[in-house]
Length: 302
Image (cartoon, rainbow, N blue to C red; front, top):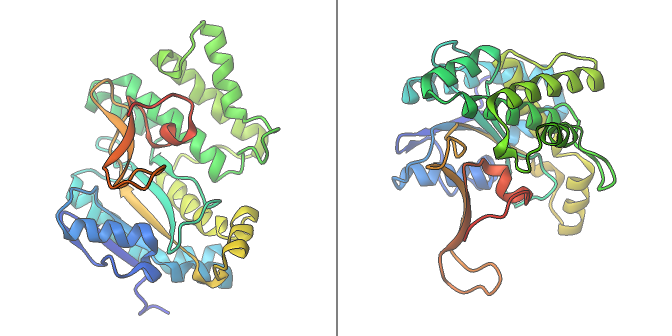
């Protein structure tokens, strides 16, 4: 088992994979590798192969973590080397995103997790380093919400279900007499983090994980777990996608769109999605993070 390569790194215009390796690295992992090779500035990271997804269902969570651990730790060291930050460090904490990526586009797969590595020490270090406490606590708030939703199973199952985190945010906004999330102060965000963690404890019976490595393994296993959720299984049936294809996991150093009025997040397309016309187009949101554009909470700009 040990001589199989399960993790492929990319960063600084180098990559162990390439665009032709969709079957092994998934669409996202193969394209991230290719973008590095053609010189596009992509945050460094690594991709865990689709084959590990099959091993996850064959051998179980703990066995897969033990198999992956040496390669993932080595790949994380590569990100640390390229960014000058350290995962789990109290002074210069490296924060990462975790995404799923099958070889065919798959709705119903796990949502992205951003700002992973955040905890009570990291948030203070980020606030100090950026001189922007509101940004640090906003990133922490988002992380607890995404992780709670996606990894700890607090996401609403149907449209009738209430999102416990959104309810807490609405309560806070009502209390403060403000309309937008962006109107909440640093103290409001600190209160949200406390209330979010209390909600996690109440619903799951467990404390929210503070150790970045525990957070990472939880997220990686949640990606593999989402391959067999009801929506994914149904989508595969409708589109004749074999279950044994599995999904890959891409872990990447964070870049931030929510650092203020001079940063943004967006989605871009090489064609007009409505007409198929060959024009570059997209939309963006100032002072936001990835999921905000897709979630439709705020209206993006063209």
